[in-house]
Length: 514
Ligand code: GLN
Image (cartoon, rainbow, N blue to C red; front, side, top):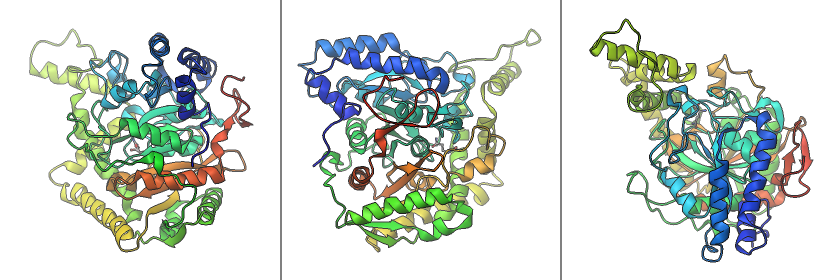
């Protein structure tokens, strides 16, 4: 049995609109009003699609009866700015894509629209999704709704802030090394990275193609399951997508966790290098205890190579990025740096134009990644870096396979991040410190396994803490089942950040209070 739908959630909004209790236009206006009131402070949105959203909501109201079965009927959603929306700005928060309006929708966008979702705007992120704080954005950083002097995480910081601040109950974003889960953790919302291949990447501006996956940020586990049901499935435009056995997410929650084995990689958590904050640790232990009380068996998980996930990821991801970003040359997409009067015609001028465009168009972190990746792939270093990283990647996957097969573990639990949201500026000048914060999230991308971040309380200073579960391939259902148990034991999503200031309010009614 699942909890009754709440009208702040996607599931609840859908039910209210389908039943005629609320109009899609009213819900859409409420969403747009919240954005207008709070976004000047938070900077979560790169563009607000007011007219388009209201027109679509009106269409939904007009056809409500005919469309009443649609799973996201009238639900306002936001889309990360690395996902193509037809005719609407899609910039990856980069200067190099200023003015770019794709000629097509990403497959996830097509599916969300067809399911009745109303796209109210695009969300801010680190440039080309490279980062953990949304500070590498051409639009400036997003502020954390719980603490405006802190990061909302990254790279999908805008997406997480938009859900936490109740702009819309659903954001759709990409996760290459934690970019859905880490911001979800920092902002106290649910964030799912599905199994690699579960969701089509067509229309996602590619970062690391063997790591990238699109997933939802939501208030509740049931909403994450509902959105996954809409966006999952094979797509002829993405050969890595497939029709794996259905998640049957709706049936998964059963109110208890009996029969499930939860593996905890104690060695990884104890390692000093993990830098686990004591308050994160105690929130993690409390969540684990709640799951244990619901009947799960908690066991030790032996993942000896997980400690090498950060170095492996920071070779593989930049290598793939350096190749993917070669297409941004000022010719095919977006902005071009002007040619100078000194230029004549010919190949040398073309090369100069590429150089100027890329110099002016890319920010420092993207340039760093392109250089790191090009170096790791270069003839003399390929074996020492890129190949070695791929070998470590296989060892990490073997660790998980063994934990699942030999130790009978159903899901692996860790904190999502070693620390809560850090102050803006804290790691901006220290890429290594920024990268090390990804210690618990990148394994799921290197292995392709599904993983979810769930709200697990707040620190004494009021900062959200995330609890992460990693499952067997295509077993998102197990993540939802355990997540549902945790959500019932501690429904953190009902608390929301206070408008204007930071701190918390018990959610009194639906959004719009000031
Ligand atoms: N923080 C990681 C990075 O900077 C992950 C980014 C992502 O998942 N897009 O690469």
